[in-house]
Image (cartoon, rainbow, N blue to C red):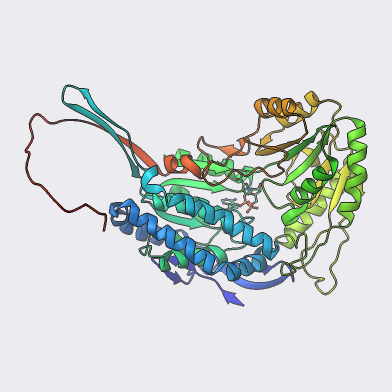
Length: 498
Ligand code: NAD
């Protein structure tokens, strides 16, 4: 069994708190590592390291900082296969899906290569007599990210790539359930040329998080995880005077209009509902067919597809999805299915009893499909985060739209239709942050921004894209007047940044 470390000051550092969490391999159910849980003192050591290293990094010209990310992208591509396998074994998702996790993070690293352009300020010459006015974007100093288990490569990169490109030092507190890939990413950043101390990984639980929220040298905190923790971190971080953005849970609806192509819709629903065992914040967990005929036709096509889902170990390249992350999470999902039955929903496909031959101790769950789910049920209101899809029927488009708008979460939503007018009206009126039109999982690309609405997000800037540069910098505006100047000196050599 491996004992994992922290990564501080450019090196692996053993945990000294004496507290550890078990790290599982979900496909076999084995404990494969011990994850150190940092104390307040260990967190503080990382912050001091970051604080000391940050000024020189901020003073490094932005093209040079961007070149580190350029090299990092090259190294990610070089090591893609090993990273994907490591990620799949620790998280449970399949190896091809793990590659997607890494690539969606890599794309944000690519976006950040443009940081010299993104950091440019504004300039007005002769704003008054002899007066020039300009704005600068300066890094905040030491910033931190607290990330969830379900995208252990993508979400850490969404946080540290823009923060570091902007000249900050970064403390990453990844999920204690799958910290191996985050540790590898930190190693790769050092290999790419990042100075020691600029990216530190501190493993831990609530104790490390609370220490980070209270630390006076941490200027900003970005969080992704469940809504109750998002709310807690937002309140405590803001009370400590930090800039905070927190992204929380979801219950994403797919509205299916009577004119939708049902074969395409069912293909989309199967992937979006059950891919990664439903452990995605952008998974579709509620299908809302409009009209009885649409609902009946959808169910007729969906049931055999859910029954035919291929569930396998994470290393099975042909599997549709693998195990869920821990036994505790598996039990929680099964309890939600029990609850749905008790609440009166119709369980058309029951995956609770699924077991995989040869992997009997793995955390596997068959696909479950509910029909007759209504907005008053807890299985409709709460995030299950497993391979469980609910069909909640709507009589009209307006009812379907109202269901999306009334739900407390507002992360993603999709509509399937052939009618442009319906799609436009839906996109305009739906009270949700990310909308797909005949696209089931509308995760925006790196050069747009990612963020939900309502109780899926706390704070007012999104992740990646232009918002990430705003979040990780502060604006300074300079008004200057030079009564007289010295006009001297000439250089005949083209200036470069080398
Ligand atoms: P989680 O809230 O349990 O954990 C997230 C992070 O918070 C982890 O680093 C964890 O160590 C820390 N944490 C957990 N409990 C804490 C506590 N009591 N005090 C302080 N810190 C604590 O979430 P998870 O189970 O790792 O991830 C799944 C959740 O994340 C789902 O709700 C999913 O929808 C959400 N998610 C949201 C987005 C988004 O962008 N909106 C993206 C991915 C995942």
